[in-house]
Length: 334
Ligand code: ADP
Ligand code: MG
Image (cartoon, rainbow, N blue to C red; front, side):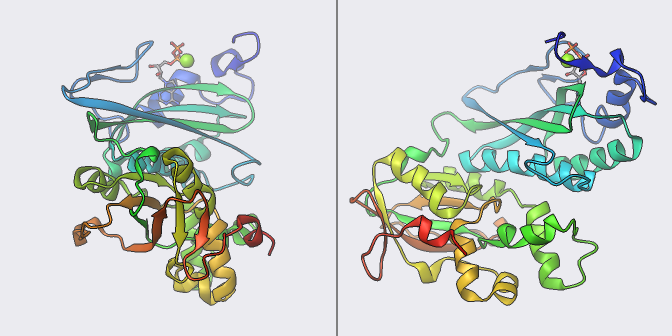
């Protein structure tokens, strides 16, 4: 590794701050890295975690690369929020409770304004979600951010993609397509605070600050959902992961796919539905639920649910109205 990667402390050129000072100031902060029971966090070669009896550790990692996953000169606070949010969403999808995370940060330079903004955005969501930073790695290179999250889930209770049964109802949380609808504005480097129109602002917030459905995920795992995932690449593509892992198909009621007013106002109903079916980055949950079981979500979970169809035996995705297969490609050229 040392042959290819240059640690920050080895190339102090242009560095106003050393690597260890940087970690202490921006990451080993009380609000971001609070002491946790059963955990030894930042400072040694590894963090140490005690896993409570009867629990499993759920782990996931996501990497964002500048110019690939986010535009250059992206606001650092929003970026930090987003990278942690997309990781938390994976925990939500498994029904896991957030525990701790590590951060791999590759920076072209140690800019204090950028680091302060990044640290603040990270702290904001970490505190909201009740998750602590326990370690990481800091190197120099093209801006790349990796977050690895850990969560706990009672043994055998994690929501997997493989549990959907014929007859189950298919649900999604919140509204879909908003983040895809925001993309044009994101590429123009608009941020929520600068957007003048309230619908545009709403879509941008949905893109930059997705709400990981943590409480919903835990509730679903405790109350008998049969499978779940988070929608990161678009409903049709992601639903397919559940269907193929479970060896089933689906009949969808296209009129029931939830779109926000903001999305319909800006793009019209047809295009809004296309975005909702194929657009990524919403981080809502899609799950299956037993046919004969009522679902009543406590209002305290703070999200809406829409039943969008049911699981079928045929290994296809069809339109419930016409019985015809839904071709994802038909929705991607607009
Ligand atoms: P090592 O050389 O053993 O990899 P480092 O010098 O990279 O250790 O890191 C020292 C300590 O600081 C470790 O506990 C590591 O987990 C932590 N750390 C490094 N970078 C970060 C970061 N960006 N955020 C949080 N903790 C970090
Ligand atoms: Mg290291």
